[in-house]
Amino acid sequence: MPMNVQPIPNVSDRINEIRMQTARILNNEVLPNENRLWAWRRDGKVAEEDRQAARTLRHDIQTKVKQAGLWAPHLPEEYGGSDLSFLEHAYMNEVLAYCVGAASLFGVVAPNSGNQKILLKYGTEEQKQKWLVPLTEGKMQSGFSMTEPDNAGSDPRSIKTTARKDGDSWVINGHKWFTSNGKAADFLIVMCRTDDPDGPAEANGKMTQIIVPTDTPGVNVIRGVEVWGRDSDHCEILYDDVRVPLANQLGRTGSGHQAAQDRLGAGRVYHCMNSVGQMWRAFDLMVERAATREVHGGLLHTKQFVQGFIADSYIDIQAARLMTIHCAERMDSGLDARTEISAIKIFVPEAYHRVVDRAIQVWGAAGVSGDLPLAGMYQGARTLRLADGPDEVHKILIAKNVLKQYAAGESWDFGN
Ligand SMILES: Cc1cc2nc3c(=O)[nH]c(=O)nc-3n(C[C@H](O)[C@H](O)[C@H](O)COP(=O)(O)OP(=O)(O)OC[C@H]3O[C@@H](n4cnc5c(N)ncnc54)[C@H](O)[C@@H]3O)c2cc1C
Image (cartoon, rainbow, N blue to C red; front, side):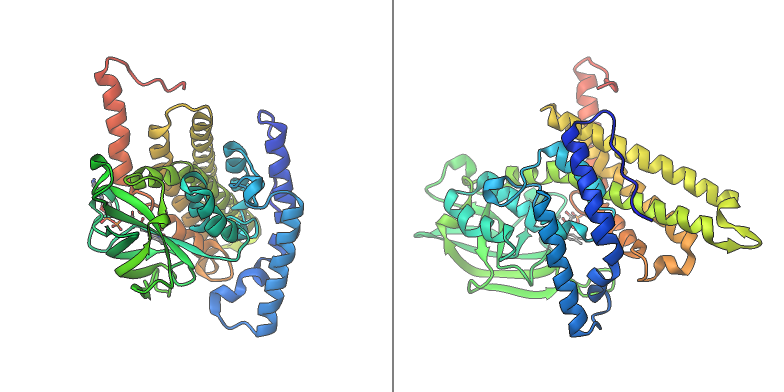
């Protein structure tokens, strides 16, 4: 069954146009080919001709996406994107994410997309030409290397990787892991604690992001860490006296933490809209199955347990979607949305987890099989609860913001 996307009454014509165009490509080009497009990733046993056919298919769809003006929605036209506004992109994501993997056909692939945004905001024109443009054209791959095995990723200030200034180079030493895309990457954006005798005193010892080409001597990709029982491209990397030009520094010394926050703020809204799109798919799959599968003398949808699942999932999706849109609208209006961002970062992955869990239950064994996207979604939903700042850290932030307002003599205004 195709995704049912109709115009929304109270959003701009442009947002509706983007959603409808995205849904058209998704329903006509991606969904009917879903297994052919991605099967090779699952079992690795696909014949070379099928692999080639999948490549051609992906290329054809990408061409159609470009013709529709939807390629790389997060980037301006001058750097190869389609220059969507923040809200336009957020609304596009709930449609795009309906089909797992479709984002890559639209030129948005993590961690490249986050790195592109950082390069756009903090990069010099030379850095943009050297790294951003080839990334957008698909001629390069990248990774973002922040988390360390021996320090808490949930507290980025605990990072120990250092960059020492030596002549006209930075010399980097440290140990990272879970650097996604680490094996394929041509360059990594590495979060370092910079030691710069010539830099401003207040910035010294603070974090700075530095571009490191992966073929630089001393970059040792030790392994892809196994995740959910499978090989992965989330890599453990040792940086051993890695020497790169000072010109590879992104932004001013000490701006690394802020740059990471920039990456995460808007990114969290996009991730949540992605989760909404995936919940939408899981919901459709669950209801379709409930309407056709006969058990114990009746269709599943006649059983009240299953009707309860449908109602609970409907409520979860509506709540998650409206919370995310509320947060996105606040951000788009330039209002402080830190509390709302933390709230969606907690609520949406939990709701996503529940919705996919119910869909799996209704599908029985097929639900955990590789024939449906549900098993992958389930793992993705669980992982989201600890990546990008674990739930507990965001709960602390929400409570801190609320308590601060009450301490200042003002109660919380839920109307805004
Ligand atoms: C699939 C995947 C891909 C990833 N990709 C990347 C990447 O590309 N680049 C990168 O740099 N990192 C990446 N990460 C790492 C991710 O960002 C970190 O795992 C995350 O920030 C949590 O850090 P940690 O694992 O060190 O957990 P820790 O910081 O050790 O936290 C462990 C747990 O402690 C609890 N906790 C933390 N703080 C508090 C508190 N104040 N109060 C109570 N409890 C608390 C939480 O339950 C938390 O889950 C990825 C992770 C995964 C799983």
